[in-house]
Every structure is written in structure tokens, then in C-alpha cells.
Length: 387
Ligand SMILES: Cc1cc2nc3c(=O)[nH]c(=O)nc-3n(C[C@H](O)[C@H](O)[C@H](O)COP(=O)(O)OP(=O)(O)OC[C@H]3O[C@@H](n4cnc5c(N)ncnc54)[C@H](O)[C@@H]3O)c2cc1C
Image 1 (cartoon, protein in one colour):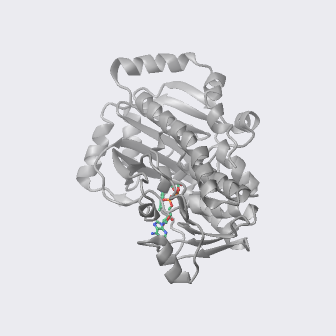
Image 2: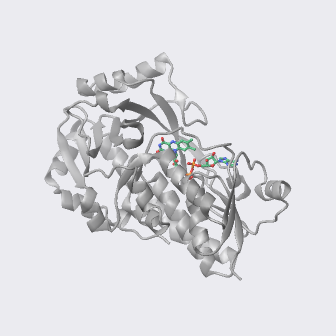
Image 3: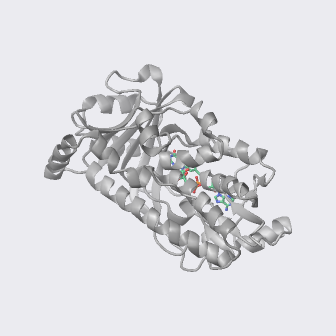
């Protein structure tokens, strides 16, 4: 008999999407989330067609389309001159080419839509305000009296469930921090296009900007080197941290620097990566999402990879009567995919943050590549069908 019920630790994007993917195969889940309620912390997330296709299979696309923005294109723009370098078409082009839309929205909106779907699904039970620390199986048995045949660690980059898996990957600070700025529509300058995702590329730093309908304004995220403030998604910057941030932009176009200085208090979080290693213990514990493989956001795939994981794990478990076999099949299906995404992120980091002659070469190569050719480079990523 295939497995009937699982425990999922963490109700972020990975945990919620996994619960819904299991339910499609008739597998019930109990979800345990440490937060007492949905946290509005965070800002924008990009949902690429490889993930929106799966959200469509969950019947959630129309709810998301009602609130998200579908950018007409993803543009690469020089941060030092504001010159457009290249673009990948999105909007209807994405729907036609990859069979699903490209959307941008607030992380909390995606989490809320998934959470409501979980709450409405009779096969899913959500337990908020329930942290699962220490040995996960023993803790869950103590909390619920149930001996779960499988515990899924969807508890993010600082996962506790991971400690139950020998040889599991370890988190490490990447040396970069992500700065989050938001500002209202009335502050949007004329040089910032409102119908696209814009990645401004500059020496050792880049800045991604796109509109967020939910906040009636813009989301901007700058990735720069910096020190880790610890395990947080929402550190407040002190004056010296702000000075060092603005220092990163000293050679940028002054209009960008002026805009950044106008925004309300920016917040930041450390970029941790989770390296390579085992994602399951061959028996009764497995990882999904950031707990398994947090990657830096240079390919904007964190949430999308988390959603794909849940679909693949659910399929493997539904297809096999043998849990260890299903876990092995899941790991071998997902690890090469995540490794490829990680390599793409490393390549983007090199290209986006290039300086000197490498930057000049990059700009020339980009300006010679037609949008369709750049889109074709992404077929393996956006055209992928997980699950
Ligand atoms: C509060 C928050 C804000 C974020 N903001 C952004 C952002 O602005 N931009 C961006 O690109 N990414 C952001 N992320 C990360 C992004 O959501 C993930 O990279 C991606 O969606 C993969 O999600 P995940 O579900 O694997 O991990 P996460 O989103 O980290 O979710 C993990 C979940 O597990 C819960 N959890 C952790 N430990 C335990 C425990 N011991 N017991 C029970 N529950 C536990 C956490 O509370 C969380 O809800 C944020 C994550 C969080 C938690």
C-alpha cells in the first residue's frame, strides 16, 4: 500500500505546496508551523512558468492572476548608465513559449493563497504555533501521539529536521546580504518602467526592481556583500550598515542612488546557501525546499524549486509501495535539476557583478543576443514539467 499520511514540518511555500501535491494523490498530511499566524515579513517573489504551471494544476492560478503582476519582459539594464542591455520577453510570450505565465507577487500573498487551499482541503491539517525542535519523529509522537511513517522537513534554510539525516547538506553564509526596499507608486521615477522586471547590473552589486500590486508600489532588492546579521529575514539597518550599503552604489547612476535614499527604512537578510549532501535518511525522513538546497537568488528560483520538489516527492511516493525506494527516486530526480539551477545562479552572479573589461565584454555579448535567443536559453528551466 502507498503511504497514507505524512507529517510536514514548516508551512512556508515548500511545505504548503507539498501538502497540496500529496492531497492530489490521496495522501493526507499534518503540517506543523512554528509561527502562530501568517507572517507578512518579506517582499517580492518571482514565480516562473515551471512553477506557475504546478500552481495551475492545484487550481490556484486564477486567484494568483487576480493579485499578481505579469511583467511584459525581464530587462537587464546597466546600473551605471541606465542603458538597456538586453531583455527576455515574458507576458503572453511566456504563456505561449513555456505554456504557463510568469508572475511577481508578495511572498505573503503566495503563502496565503496556498494556506487557504490547505485549510480548505480535507486531507490537509495545519497546526500553527507548533515548533518541531530536536529529534523530529520523537517530538511529533510526543505532540500528537502519532508515529508518522514519513516526516518531511520543509523548515527552511536553518532546518532542524535536517539534523536527523546523516550526511545532509549544511548551511553556510554566502558573504552576500539582500537589501529590501519598497516605495509607493507616487515615488516611481520616469526612468523606471512599471511593466517589467528590471535587473540593474553594476560592479559587485545588482538591484532587481518590479511592481507589487499588493503594496501599491515597487519592490527593489539589492544584493551586495556584507556581514550576516544572524538568522533573520528582516534585519533593521543601523547607520553604519546603511552607509556601507550606499557605498556599494558609489559608481552607479546618481538617479538610482537618489531613489534608494528616498525609500523608507530598508531591511535586509543574510543569504545562506545549503550545499550538497543527502536529502533523506533512507527510511522515514526527507527534505524539500530551502531545507534541502537553499540557493542564492541569482536565478530567482527559490520558491519555484520548492514547489517543484513537493510535486516530485508526491509523485514518487504515490507511485511506489516502498518508501525508501520513493525517497531515493525523489532525490535522484531532483538533485541534478537543482544543481543546474545552482550553476545558472553562479553564472548570473559572475555576469551581473562583472567589473572592468569583463563588464564591457558582457555588455557587448548581451546587446548582440536577440530576445528570442535569450528566451531559448531558458527553455530547460521554464519549460520543465515537475511531478
Ligand atoms: C519570514 C520569511 C520571509 C522571507 N522573505 C523573502 C523575501 O523577501 N524574498 C525572497 O526571495 N525569499 C524570502 N524568503 C525565503 C523564501 O520564502 C524561500 O527561499 C522559498 O520560498 C523556499 O521556501 P521554503 O518553504 O523552503 O522555506 P521558508 O520560506 O524559509 O519556510 C520555512 C517555514 O518553516 C517554518 N519553520 C522553521 N523551523 C521550524 C520548526 N522548527 N518547526 C516548525 N516550523 C518551522 C518557518 O517558520 C517557515 O514558515 C522568506 C522566508 C521567510 C520564512
